[in-house]
Image (tube, protein in one colour):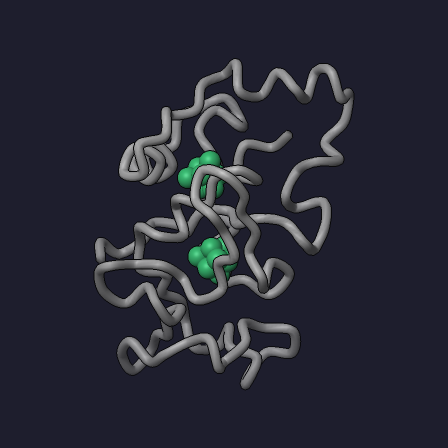
Length: 142
Ligand code: SF4
Ligand code: SF4
């Protein structure tokens, strides 16, 4: 099983900020505006991530047990752009830091061996619309 499906830690650690043009008030299929708040003249952020303690309002999770992003098909671009550690052969500082903050071990290459057995990526979070988060990208420290 994809490790993110039992994690969700990164959606509780970083400010998730993005340009206002990603809102569904401007872009069809964009980020639901009611789940965002204005950060500055150019940016919105996900509610719940502006300041500590951070927990994105769209996160449906019990951290370390189960996790899904309730707006996965409409999540901000920043949430799509940071990989889980070693998912694509390299560590991810954001992933490691988030997991450690919740007392979870950082991921390593062995955490992805299930893919060899599965022989496909069907369990990747991006393969369906009801899956957990990808972590926020280059988040602004909250
Ligand atoms: S990217 Fe890392 S911190 Fe985020 S949900 Fe996946 S495993 Fe957890
Ligand atoms: S992936 Fe979803 S739950 Fe996680 S920070 Fe982004 S919008 Fe929030």
